[in-house]
Image (cartoon, rainbow, N blue to C red; front, side, top):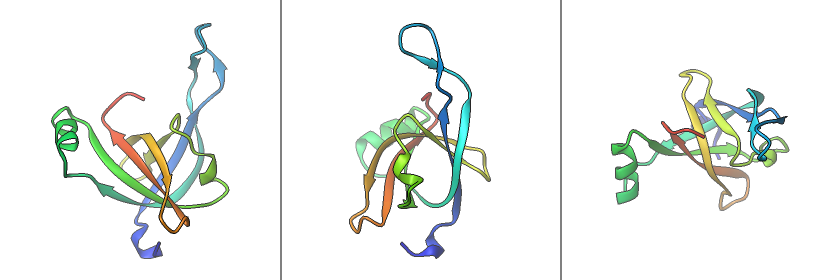
Length: 112
């Protein structure tokens, strides 16, 4: 991953571990964990992507460098664009082909 392609600043957040409703659900505010440079690629192609966009959801791929911090990200977390304030829910996480970075499938416009 070339540094020049990492043009976005993303803050990764997770929910505070405060016991919630007694059914195993957690309530609490989002807590910032760390901020990293990222590359964002909006998805435009297939039928599911077009259907999601028609429903007000925007899927994208976030690419971030692999590190001790990024190894802790799970699909319970969210990513926040520090410049625009957009909130992206993390749907899946996979290592890149060279295993030097992670590709995160994210979606904007939906509840976590």
